[in-house]
Length: 573
Image (cartoon, rainbow, N blue to C red; front, top):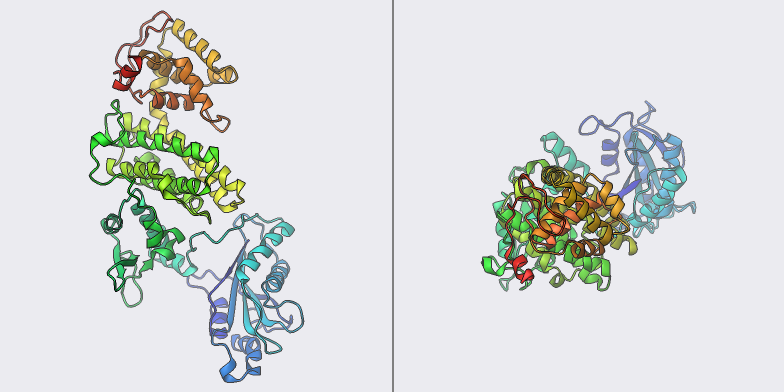
């Protein structure tokens, strides 16, 4: 249940006219009173002789106890209380009880016999509106300081008493919700989302991996937004506002939003905190970037870089320690997700976009992020943007699967980190993110794992037995689970490639399993495949080839189609 305190108004009759009206889309059905301050207020919805003017006059009577210069201009208090979509439909009597509890909790009518006059109107199954006059019967002003937080706290108790869906408590770091007017406008124009939401996503994508204010602003313009900047007398940039070209007001002028009104971390000063000298500059040369000689495309290379950065971030979250460093890793993970959503293949785009959207809530808390600790992830986000879109096939698709496999673990670790600090909304958002990432992973991994499994099934039986012995030796507690999974064939192919590249499969397997727990993995063998291929610098994708039998002594059974990386040759030497 979500109570929302709306902006104070100056016209009781004006608000009543809306509450008892048909709504902007004929959505107000049977508007009627469910409760009032004295239980006897006229109900224009059910009583033909009652009028909205009479109800407004009754509610405003305490204003006349004050001299004209003492009457507050903004005297109308308005709170809507909405149930969750999957909650049962409450009766009028139940909504009346809820209204009274909210009014007591907020201090509007604390039950001392001299509270404010109010009325609760219901015009839909799932919510009510409470209207009150902010002058008490004794002429004093009510103590409704922090009424929003007080209403939220009471809503948590109401949920328990009525067995309603439990809403996770917030901490004031969430982005501002779209208003009903903004949602109705989007529906009227046939738009999928309100302008505020569309702008928030576009601005976040512009932040991903950006290294300077100029680059950030240029990305906004390249994305098609209208951008205005505010400059101090000193010449320094103070802030920015953005608008969608087609989002206009009644005067046909663009409607601009400041970054800080889109989300707390999208103000210009908060964005500039992310820019540090350690972030790769736009003219970074190829020789300065991490070497992945087996990778054949820029998108695939960028995904390898992102996987390595995500692994490093995962270790920071697992090890605890500096909360500022952990918060920075989490925030920068949001940049990687935004970059992936922007550059992903069509078949994974919807799930990745939803994952980035959900993680936006998980990326903010009251813990101040120290971004100097998260430049690896920020560089990865930059590489993803500059690497361009992946087409979801071959090395690109396998690279996407590998980074998504790692990001699932990172999202789970983020949920755990937030839960330990009682960041309920952030923890829940991270858990939802992990679900979308799992779905995207299944879509991205289908083809490359199918190829690897086909290769694995063509390996000679003697070599498969040899690899099974390796698994049992390196992973005694996990071996039977791994060998029974469908992904065992892909792991067998990967162990073959690992030996052929000159590595010790037993040692790498033990290292891959010990790096982090595997209890949250849907497929242990899949996780081990990606960890081995990342650690050993193996190609992520190769078409199936004919195999030949070989002795299980390290000589390869697969045809020699996999190029050996320079780093592997160096390790062997």
